[in-house]
Length: 392
Image (cartoon, rainbow, N blue to C red; front, side, top):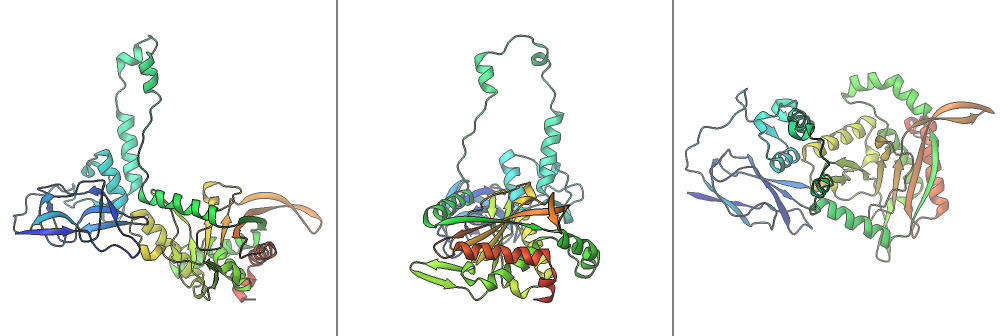
């Protein structure tokens, strides 16, 4: 008996998706719940699990096709006998995340040959990259080409300047659309300040081991910036607001977006009611988002909403930037690299760990005075963390 494999229900506001990769071929056995294919939307990758165990009888929709909810993708024969499977040396099928499966499919790799370093036999993206590097390094050099002193022909020279044209992914196209919309539809302006992070670094170094032992999570810098931002947002409600037509919506809650880089592009998962979280709650939320981003399991709900965004270009070495608004939010805070710099304290030149901060904001709603004072509050909270700990 054939069972239809359907496109699952798509998240609200998403009308269609791209079928980016089949992970089974016609004739392959699939266990109930096993992922058969990946669907890429504007925001996330969705999996198509097998509703029952059986043999994939026929694939009706090929890769790179646009599909809609309820469309029939394939037929599954649930009465077929299970054939002998291909297992790893430990007798377990390799576990692949959606992003890893996509690379394996594009490069036509054998997952059985890739050493897995993740938990429970999961193959990480780094495992695939290491495997590709090893394969490249092991390729023998063509002795005839290596020994030939003859000059290269015009066609040979041209082959050394390869080009590849590929379509944008749905996520990259959506990012481009939103960023262009932000620049064209907001009076965007950026103001800057610098913050001395010595007090935060000293506090973190003093308590990070006890913090990790108690909460089972590392104490990073982002939780300090989230806390400082919330304190500043409370004092300047317009920066936590958004514009809807001719109306201003003042949000009485603090849903903070944390920009995360993934292999597919930048995403901004949301820490909801972040003002209700303590330092450990913030760090755990950010850690969970990072894990979801790496294994491709982040959901549309994780990315929806948000009243204010924080982005950290400093992890890539950025010294200064003007971050672009994340509509419909009216402001975004940009963090940058921490560098030792000479500053004057009490009439003396001293070396301190300094970070430049950037606040991009919509000048239609936020005045320059508010933006400057907003950054001043963040600076004050970070240079004297007692403000955050004592709520003063």
